[in-house]
Length: 153
Image (tube, rainbow, N blue to C red; front, side, top):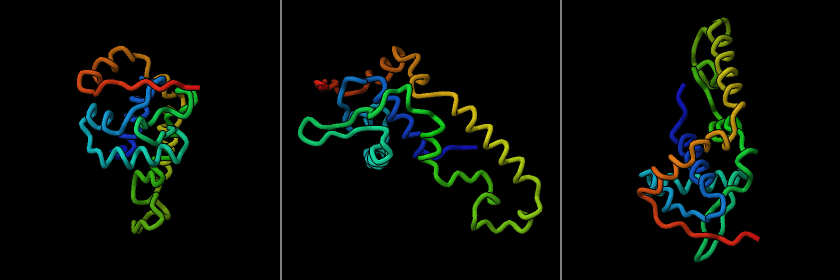
């Protein structure tokens, strides 16, 4: 199994924001820290905002921050929402052309494996991914722009 870059980047954005719960972060900050194209991050941020994982703030001092506590952001939920067509084999695709898919046992086995994959991811939240936050902050702060603090009311 392999996640798309889109889901990988989505998790990275959430981790970055989770490390800075009181700060407003810009797309440029994240793009620079991870060395990922700004255009990719723009798409990811837009989708994460639409899904309710992050909150965007417009204006001169705008940016984004988590919309929910890290404890309430489930990893499996993020993956399922950023990988809507999670087909691990052609037989899972409605348009799949496999001629044996109606009778093949492989589909059932792969389906069990996929369910197990999401069952494991479902045990973890963003908070679990932030456990070693001192190390993560150090790695990401070596290349990032200075943080902007937002007074949250």
